[in-house]
Every structure is written in C-alpha cells, then in structure tokens.
Image (cartoon, rainbow, N blue to C red; front, side):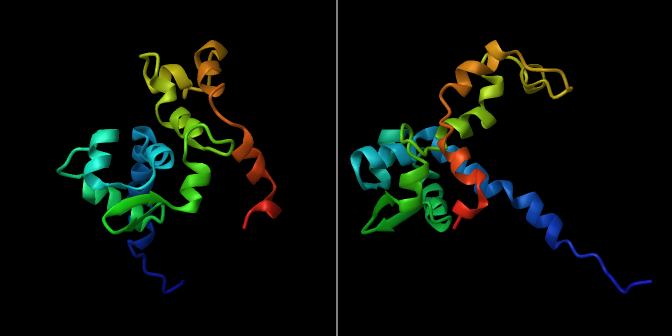
Amino acid sequence: MSDYSPTPERILELGQGFWAAKALLSATTLGVFTELDRNGPQTVEELESTVGLHPRSSRDFLDALVALDLLDREHYEYRNTPEAAAFLVEGKPASFVGWFEMVTTGCTRSGGTSKQLCRLDGHRTSSTTIRPILSRVSSTPMTRFSNSSSVR
C-alpha cells in the first residue's frame, strides 16, 4: 500500500484552466487583437470605445491579456505581442480567430442548442449547418502544427 495522499492542486488547475482560455476567446470575439493590428497601440479608453469594453472591467481584462503574454502595455497603451499579431488577428493567413469562433459559438449560431447542432449525441452534423463556419477557418494553423518538428 502506498503512502500517497491526494491533494487538490491538479483538480484546481483543471477547474481554473478555463480562465485563461475565456480571456483569450473573449478578446478574439471582441476583436481586440485585430483592432490593435489595424490601428496600432491604444489606451484603455480607446479600446473601450473601439471594441466596446465596459469601463468597469476593461483595465483588468486588458491586464489579464498582458499577464497571458498576448498584449504588451507601455506608457498606458496596449499593443499585440508578436505571437498575438501572428495568430490572433482576423484575416491573417495563420489566424486562429475563425477556428476559435467555430469551437465557441459556431455550433449555436443558427439558434439551436449545442447538442442539436454539434450532435453530441453521436449522430453526424449536417454539412449545411457547419460548412459556412468552416469556410471562414484557415487551415494554415492546423497544418503548421500537425508536424511536431515545426513546433518550437
């Protein structure tokens, strides 16, 4: 018999793991990275106006993106990190924005429930439901990372 005593660390890590993902997905949905790419560094007030952030939480939200190394902040202005500029700007060849949209909101876009549209019950999803979403998704990021030797 082992002397193993369970600890909550792994469970807490799993349970809190969505926080970083939610910040990333919220920022892509709002277009934060695309806005900064198109118009350059902006203050918190400018981003509130351009992407519709609420003043009560905008600074904390943007600083969370800084803590996640997705934005840089210098002299009260936010800008994309090189990684965010390469992979989180809508319309760029290696952008993941369309993929994030598909996995977070695409399944419920036409008004049904996730289970109805994504067919989590094991039945095949209609190609007419998902095809418009997939057409906006660049295959470049998935292809790029399918070969483990290309990952740094």
